[in-house]
Image (cartoon, rainbow, N blue to C red; front, side):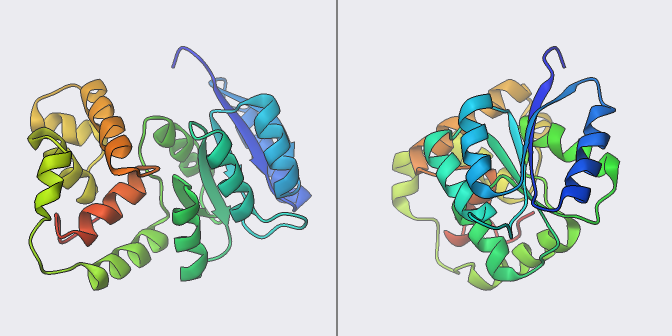
Length: 221
């Protein structure tokens, strides 16, 4: 990558935060632009430093990671937010998705998995821990309707955009979609941005949920 990925680390547990900072410092293509101990500090630093990615804890004093994510996404929607948490609770997961978080990882992940998650979210992917992805999949399968794709979708999206939305719903990465459709990754990214804008969705996870709930796909992630 030509430019380093600028990362803000937010966690109220100092020992864990310093461990993440030390790990990130070992990667020359990652630049840590700041650290915060609560959601209120996270919002202020996000405004000041304009990071590419925020690693955000959920349960913090003063202002939770979920509330901070909502505020940051309202003001600075281009910033990618990955929730880093010990929680596997369904409500926290779905609240994070509704808040606009692009990823949701458990804190027991390996260092290399953290690096991969940061790189993938910048590419437009949606990093999820295995256990979290399974929970999301089960919920979406329960909520998937049996009716046909709404007719208005074909009026909103082009045939190619519906095709890409379907593949996003199936859990394919941008590269996999590009290979499947014989187009470039940059073309996939452009189509995905257009899809999100047209459907008023915040990120790839919300697009996958949308594709499942309207019956476009039966299996996601």
